Image 1: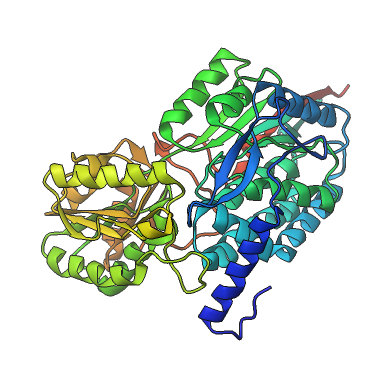
Image 2: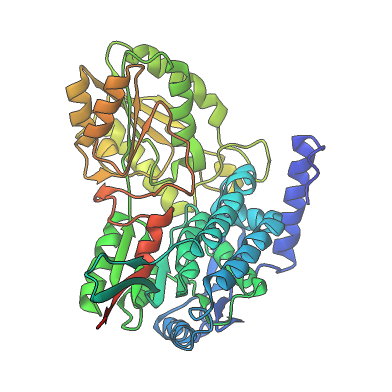
Length: 508
């Protein structure tokens, strides 16, 4: 759609014109997807989907409730029980999912535009990060599924014990608003590859790409009923899905507060398997022996301000040795002009809009709390671009933060960095681990012994050493403590969506 040879201003005009046409001509479809058909909500209720870029109405979206979830789960159950997907050979499922990934790439401009309009992230990131990551995830699980072997137990000669992986059945997937495509792909890839049927409930804040992905999956050859998408609010559609007695497993990514409810819902219903990927307050630890301070400053700024700070793994706590703290904070502050909020439809923009007004108020509330508790705001801290009707916050840095301050304890989900100074290695580890979360962490040191020692001491699902933003579908993603109990990505994710069955055969 865009011409890479055009200057950024020319490309921006193309994206804006395409967005205007999409909205004006009513080409965005907010209906759900059940039994292979786009459908209105049973009660024909809708809610408004507005763009955080400028507040414009994008489309009314079907407001799914209990009745809609019942239809979707029923469709998924029938599809699973009759084996139209689960009964296919892994190589056959592989071909469909490969085609699904190809269609995601072929529709990259459309999907990227929907993602940016719906969620507010820069178009360059939607196009260059989110779409390729979603496609790679689906393709990777497609390639993996016919290479995962079952087992034979080492029994005596009078027996043969087969250990087989079988699809768990109907999977409920509830995904957040910050990476709608990627999070959906992280659930759909392993769940579908393993042969399950899925009911996907996207966030009401950003449902559009999930609905379009459902259509592309059908076009790729996924049988009707295997993937159903029901948009709606968490306390309506999400709760109904989590409580449903015919859902066998639930994959949830979202806040720790709601993650607790998911475990409660499992206990109140059929004890369905629940995998939570929850929040984070990740520590970025910089020691005075690092010889890569400039790269570290660029990395922490790029990571906390990427996606407007709306990332569960954002390194929102910067722990820096007191000997180099002033210099290092200065290096970070020098990066903030590179992340000023701008029009997300301009390909040169690197920080866009927060997802909605509620999130804007939440972030500004935390900034106010930082001021009240005595932290020093040394960059940003204000709303931006209010005249556009959108929801923007400047890149914000607080210095002089204590670990017991609200901005250091709670997940802000915005472009806010808290700087905490430490005296020695023991204090750094203690401060890093003094959190209810344990999703990710980063250690910067030029001494290999210290790097290994601290990495082992940190309680986090992933510890980065002398980097932060490197990642791949081949490694698991998840955390410890209140960051959750599940793992997305890698072959380990297949454990969430399969059951182990032992078949014991006596040999006479």
